[in-house]
Length: 92
Image (cartoon, rainbow, N blue to C red; front, side, top):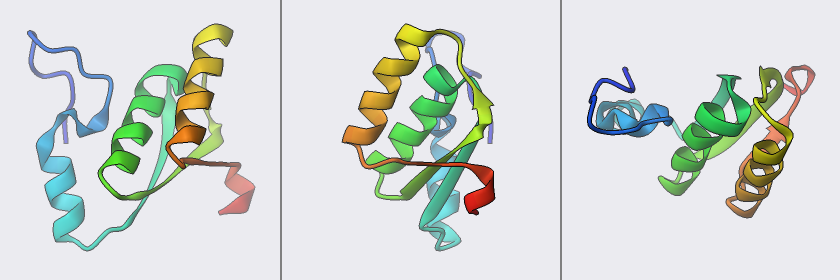
């Protein structure tokens, strides 16, 4: 799956590629783990979209990094209000 392939559209989320949702549902996947760069943008946006699409969504917090404190605080609030779980890799 690819994101950011449309030069006319900003896409931080991995779900910017509609094939991702289709593929996950076709394979009966119900839980999505997210990690990478950057927590407060791409990781958070992917997790939010995942949760909004009905997947149980978990961010592996110690496997991601943030850009800035202000955007991190805002993303934390959005994630928690959308029932995205935050765990560390030792909890998997």
